[in-house]
Amino acid sequence: MTRREPHPDMRVLTEAQKHAYGGKTVEEQRRAWSAYTASLAPPRPDSLEVRDTTVPTPDHTVPVRIYRPRGAAAALPCIVYMHGGGFMKGDLDSSDPVAWGLTHETGAVTVSVDYRLTPEHPYPAAFNDCYGVLAHLHANPDAFGIDPARMAVMGDSAGGHLAASLCLAARDRGGPKLVAQAVVYTVIGTDMTQPSYTENAEGYGLTTASSRAYKKLLFPDTRYDDDPYARPARAKDFSRLPPAFVLSAELDPVRDDGRVYASKLALAGVDVTYREARDMIHGFMRARFTGAAAKAEYDAVCAFLRERLFRS
Image (cartoon, rainbow, N blue to C red; front, side, top):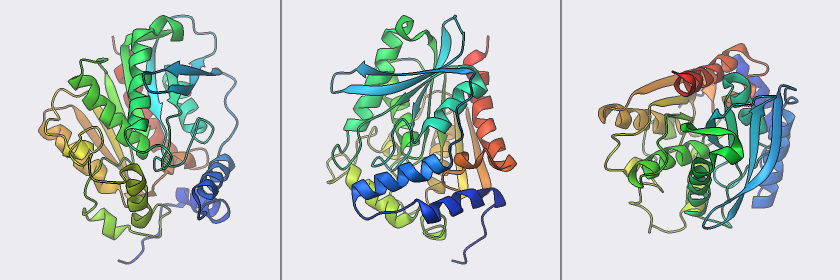
């Protein structure tokens, strides 16, 4: 396939990737990812109160970072946010600009989840951590200053996969009734035969080869192939899920996972908005500080969450 030139707003990402992206070992890749994300991160606004704490869950004590509008006293809506990084990279610091932006733009509390990573902790560790945090927040709202009737999930890339999984599990288990889900350049456990995995296989940062490698670390064998929380694409029922905003990047190997997920939701009667960022690449939300078009995409996510969380 002939490589297309990405949107000019993506230049800041491609330039940063030249200097702080890559590595052969897991630790080298994690350090490179931290350097890459730090190079794109401006300071947090002074309008936010931020604190780190931990949440006990049945499997693991999970670190979280809580973002709250400064001085807010009332119980606020809550966004549970899961970061990207192929399930192998990422932490509270690398995802900080995406997470604080959610609170800055919506006025809701954001709880960013530092779930366990592969290869040390394959599935279901990350899923269990995230669902455990969601359930704990819902059961202990006063401790976090949140309204348990107004909770949403948001995730990008691997975090989008986790957000979709949480929606399925919360419905199936009689868990928290979520008012919204936002998934951005998500993966949902497809078989990776969709056209985008060929059209955008390389040349745009994330590659099809690395997507397959991340998947192998998450699922070292086939025992979870038909588990809908492991692979939401395999779920048999997509009805009764929260209203969804699905945002993909056009020049992204995982683009079609977003298309597939949105179509499955729509066919099941779920209220879903699908949007595709034209000529943008995986990770475009990190370009919002220097690019108006990238900012418009991020703002669209926040507008959806704000409307769903604060509707009367």
